[in-house]
Image (cartoon, rainbow, N blue to C red; front, side, top):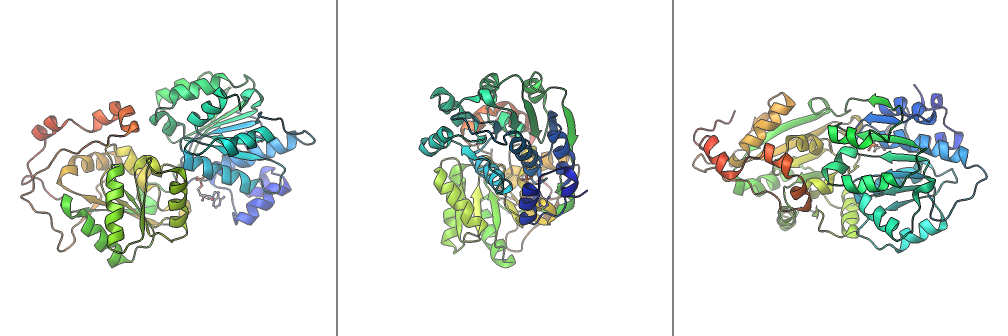
Amino acid sequence: MKFTDLGLSAEILRSIAEQGYETPTPIQAQAIPLVMQGRDLMAAAQTGTGKTAGFTLPILQLLSTRSAGLSLKRFKPRSLILVPTRELAVQVQEAVRTYGRHLRIKSTPIYGGVGMGSQLSALKNGVDIIVATPGRLLDHIEQRSVDLSGIEILVLDEADRMLDMGFIRDIRKILALLPKKKQSLLFSATFSDEIRGLVAGLLNDPVSVEVARRNAPAEAVSQSVYHVDRDRKRDLLIQLIDDHGWHQVLVFTRTKHGADALSDRLAKAGIRSAALHGNKSQSQRQRALDDFKRLKLNVLVATDIAARGLDIDELPHVVNYELPNVPEDYVHRIGRTGRAGSSGQAVSLVCIDEHKLLRDIERMLKKDIEKKVVAGFEPDPRIKPEPIQKPRTHTAVKQTSRAKTSHPAPAARGKSRPSARQQSWR
Ligand code: AMP
């Protein structure tokens, strides 16, 4: 299958060639023809599969063919792409701009954390495509600076993430404002009953498309666990970065405070680093991400929410400085590496408090992860496990039901867990 077999216009094929893409990825080969036929889609695909181009290219094709000779209407976009995070809004809109650079199609990202001014003027001048996070889109709806009655194509991107982040009510409100006759495309890594319920009345005779993750953890990503004491993680991380000459490392911490503290500590050790989390301003987050992509920073310390959907080409190393509370987040985290066919390395620093979390992850992966201990960092068997503090974030509150099942209360943990001495290193 070649891009030229998909029925895309010469202008779109030209921008694809300029990107250096030679063949469509499996999701693109499946989704592009269906979307161009006007079908509704329910696609199981996550970041790293090329899904963004999978919906962007046919949308550009459809809108540019249909709009020939039409002028843009003020405040009335024709396609809405809903995404969970600000970073993803920026990334997806950049993709729209890149693939549409030889077309007369206008687009704008709509997200919070920045002033409304430039978004307002873009909407006022008229745009074809908006890439929006739900909260800010609702702000514009309330201010009447956007009118969704002209939407021809809707995309819900990373729908599972949007629900995880508590956007369900916002999404329902937005969907209620869309015209009944439209094409709807749903992209999600997983399909829970909640998602199926959300889209039950939305999708019209949808085609299901599914692709395996390109970077299924077992294949493209080598995984290892370093056993280390809680208080020695920072020094071990610094040593690993120095010893191996890692130059682009995404490090995950459980809390925003932990991300800041670790980033400061790395900086003191002479490692160029920044923290990426929800308390940072949008411009700080964007600058950190840009600097990291350009290797002006070697380490980005991020929380799960901040890192969602980050598109960093061929990221070589991901470190779980702390294991996530939810096993699925482990897969999402290490999915940041080994993207688009390149190989990657995922390292987890695990202390005695986290052995249950590690077992849950291995159970989900259905395999044991290779265990290592670095000389000089051998865990002290006298150290007892301590309860893991849950992050006090907006999202953590909304995720309590998930967190509860995978993260027992401290009292229960104390009873059910073996003592430090009984723990084996496996
Ligand atoms: P996505 O899953 O949309 O986040 O895309 C993951 C990465 O794959 C992005 O960096 C894209 O630029 C890249 N990509 C998308 N389509 C192709 C393709 N056909 N060939 C090579 N790389 C691609």
